[in-house]
Amino acid sequence: MKRFFLTAAFALAAASAAMADSHSGKQNAKRELSAPIIRLTPVIKMNADALALTAQQRADLQSWLATMPAKRKALEAEALQARAALRQAILAGAAKEERDALAQKVGAYEVQLVTMRGNCVDHWRSVLTADQFAQAILLMQSK
Image 1 (cartoon, helix red, strand yellow):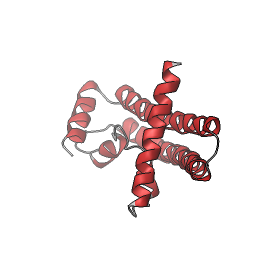
Image 2 (cartoon, rainbow, N blue to C red; image 1 turned 180 degrees about the horizontal axis):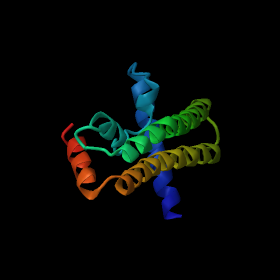
Image 3 (cartoon, helix red, strand yellow; image 1 turned 120 degrees about the horizontal axis):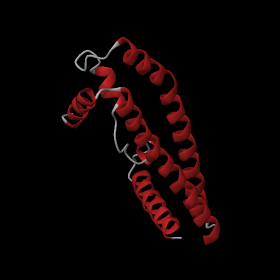
Image 4 (tube, helix red, strand yellow; image 1 turned 30 degrees about the horizontal axis):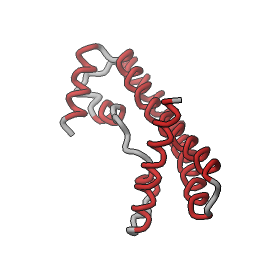
């Protein structure tokens, strides 16, 4: 129950921020989603030589890049659709129960996106050596 309220509160806060942005003329769809909690894969891709990736690690990187960004983008598209439905319900004066259900759905998508980023880090932690991983984190934090 506590998770429900936290998820709903987060979704409503995010929806409020999105509505404020749309009223101020900022209609960038990407901005409607929460900022990625971490972006490690692009750092690894841009620094493959500096990280001294092995042939096997480079193959893994190529495989990851061939599949995971598309999965993330598909999930982001679903999240944007859920946000649009919530926005429409708010504007149409839909019943609170309906808006709450839609807010829950928006929150669930945000949780999935954050979890997806965490899983990405876990993946790279398992593929890279401890030294490579530490260097990748330092490179990411320096940007």
